[in-house]
Image (tube, rainbow, N blue to C red; front, side, top):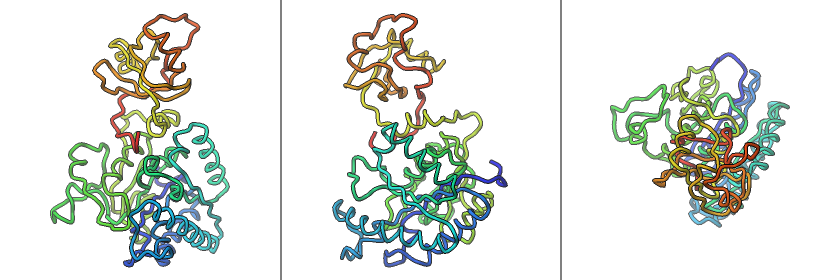
Length: 373
C-alpha cells in the first residue's frame, strides 16, 4: 500500500473511546476525533466513520443509572443517543466546512443483494462528493439474531462494501499482543500480521471496557474479513495524538494487518457471498464435484449434486457440503430447490446452466461466518 496516495479510509471508533469515565459521551474526545478526520479530509482522502456510542449517549437520558442490559432498554437508549451523537458530529464537521451524513444499517441490508448494492451505491455517491458518511447499526429495530454483533464486524463489512483502501480500528488498546498485556508484563506488541494463526487467536483476550461490545476476538474476526478482501488494516489506541494520520502513513504504533500476495483476495461479489449473504439451504456434492470445486474452482454441475436440503429460489446462496457433511464453500444456485432436486445426479444439455457457476463459488472459507450464519 502506497502511504502517499489519496485513499478511501474506513475508521471504526468504539464506545469506550468516545465516553467519559462516567459512561457519557465526551465532547472532548469527539472533538479530537473530528479534528483528526478533518486532517485526513484536508489531505484529500475519502473517509467513512463507523461510530459506536449511541447507547452510551442515550441511556442516561432514558433515566438509567448504568448501561442497560435488556434489549428494549438498549433500543430505547439508542433511539435517543443516535440523534444526540449525530447532532454532535454534524455540528463539529460543519465547523470545519464538511458535511456528515447518517447511514443506519441492519444485517438484512447486507444479506439481500439488491439492498447491499443500494447501500454501496449510496455510500459511493456520498464519498465521491466529499461527504463524511457516519455508519452505525440500526439498534432501535434490530433483534439479536439479526445483529452484526459488534461494530468491528460491521466496519470490516463496510470496508469491503465500499472497496476501501484501508480499515482503521481504534480501541482502548494500542495493538495486538502475543499475550494479554494486562496479565503478562512481558507481552510483546505484534507490529505486523500477515496471517491470523491459531496461536494468535488463543492469545486474544477481551476488551477491558464496560461500555463496548467488541473484544479482541471480534476484532480478529473483523481483520480476517478485511484481509480476505485485500484491505490493509490497522489496530491502534484511540486518543493518541495523530493516530489516524500516522496509521494512514504507516508510522503509528499499533498492529498492521495485511494479507500476503499468495492469499486470494475476494472480489465484491464473492465478499457478499462469503460474509453477508446468509445461506438458505444446503447442496451436498459427490467426490468428483468436490474435487472440481476445490482444485479447479470449476462450476458445479447437476451431475455432481448428491443431495439438496431446504427450500430456496434461484439466485439464493447455499452451503456446499461434501459426503462427510463438512462444509467446503458457499455458492449461488442457478435453480430453485425443487428443480435442482429433479436434476441432481443427471447430465444436462450443454446449453443448460450449471447448478452453480464457478464465479459464484467461494471455497476454502476458513473465516468464521459472522454473525449468525
